[in-house]
Image (cartoon, rainbow, N blue to C red; front, side):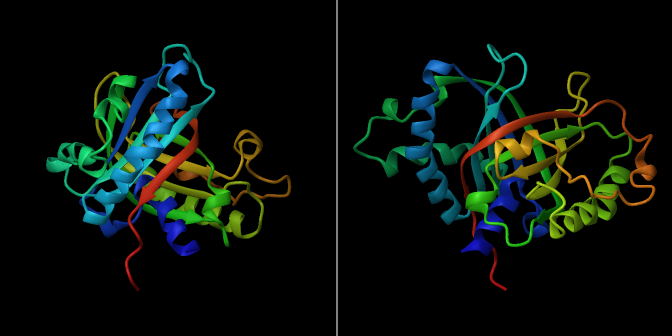
Length: 259
């Protein structure tokens, strides 16, 4: 069970190359505070069941509801992030029409969430090939909060190479030695949008077991950074990264493949 749950959290942003043709969407939504409780109730009562059904059919490999913690523009900005991983984007919209069949005795208006909020942005990504989790991590206890980051590398290949060959082994070692509060990490490539209003070309995510850990220092005082760490990419960023913190409300994932 723990192995399956680790795979689930790895699929939070769809990490392995097992689904190389998969497309990930980050759908940002604004739900007014007075509607939030009912919105989350409907997502976890009805739409989660649909996601479980579509994962079983092979149409989805991952679905999650994340609720933003803190940030700016709180009175108007997006406060929900929905993460989907589709096996076939050409049939993605057909999935959501299957809800009524699962709950034939419930009115659609009582399950609807689309009209309870406003879609503010949709980002399309493809999976990176990196994911690490802390040894013996229990996803049910250790993966409760996640930082979602977007990066602006000048050279995407150089940035991802650094993350694969330097950042990944460093954080993996720190986790093994108990010198970081981070419980998981992974990354993805941004496909769209690509414009003057959205400069980011890669994304990554950091997982934590508590809000205190997410907001605190992520490394212990006795942690030692490797010599010349990051020197290979020190001039590779075209601008600052964007980082937001979310509470993981719920998620559904395809099971790991049989070994």
